[in-house]
Image 1 (cartoon, helix red, strand yellow):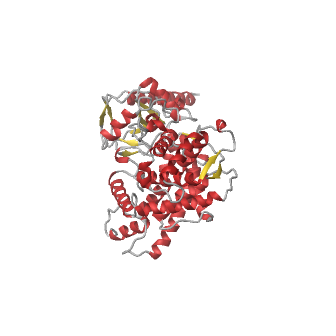
Image 2 (cartoon, rainbow, N blue to C red; image 1 turned 90 degrees about the vertical axis):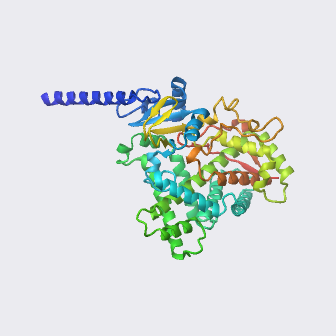
Image 3 (cartoon, rainbow, N blue to C red; image 1 turned 60 degrees about the horizontal axis):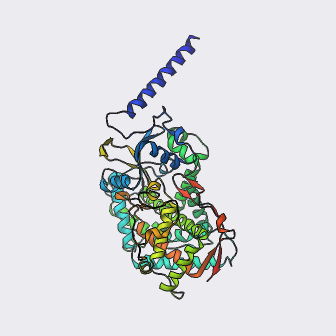
Length: 493
């Protein structure tokens, strides 16, 4: 009995210590932004819920303002809402907010390697190398444009095989976009019927979708516990390991035929750099960084673009009048006899505006990726300690009523001026901003335009159900938004 009483007393004392610690950390002179009181160990997980973390954070914004603090488990996070707060942090204080935080359910697969989840000198060297290499192989130049044009025609031919029957475009779009990355990374594209290629794209889709599920959110809040036990929260990591195995197999093939004096693709260039720095004990050009940098390019370069296109086609099914205006602009500027080019975009303001509005409205990375502050940072009168996680909520930028009139409506006209010319909007950050802005932004913009116009040049999109019945609500919405599955029919123009 005495032992039981002592145990209960010990437990009570422990709870008091944890509560005191949580309260103390919340009220440090420092003056972190305000926020809800965290529970010991759980933090604010119960207040944030599991189904829609974004919605819960937006509700907290109503109470605490555009800058507030929450605790995801034991991790302290400063949340930024609205264009002005996000811009002040990521652009005006770019260096201070340039650190990268972890998303345990995803970043554990990288272990700090590659580009996206790296920090410090490793991040700087690998990002600089990746940007230089992509430019040398034509990112933003005609050679990459030609590859996208060729792939777009392959996609059009594949879509033609549907003969007007209803189909789900999910893997057609994923394979086409993935082939662009393959041509950059491996130096060649894959046939759409290639079994390994099909399996790879299914894994990438599954991995992206998992990142937004409840099990992944719980893993992110309690990685120390859930990382050690089996369950559905480990599904994403299993997908990652299979993707990594595919990449390793390709790297070994290229190592066997590598010509150090004539690198042909991203992997070749990295292998050459590894050879040049093999005597440098501090080099960041290692096999692990090569595998993870390649994984970064595949994942970021495939699923984000294909998901945006998939969301865009669903929106055009819902609003056929928008599609008709794009058709008119394609006919007037490009015609039916030549392939679209990047130069055409500047003469197609309505199409350009529609692509911007698709990216704004689909908002496929609503929480962006977590940042950390690289040193103790003064921000809006608060003091954010070094290492604190920062989530810039891009959804609150894209749906900011101060930046967009009637933000819940899909309206390409918001990106047009009174003369019908394209106009930029400040509250538009689908690629994030500052030092961590997406390194593939130029490539993604090129792909979105050329794939969309190439398909609409040849086809009219039709829904097998009444467009009024189509829902634009995402199927998954946390770390990433995934559009609902749908069917479309293609009618040749």
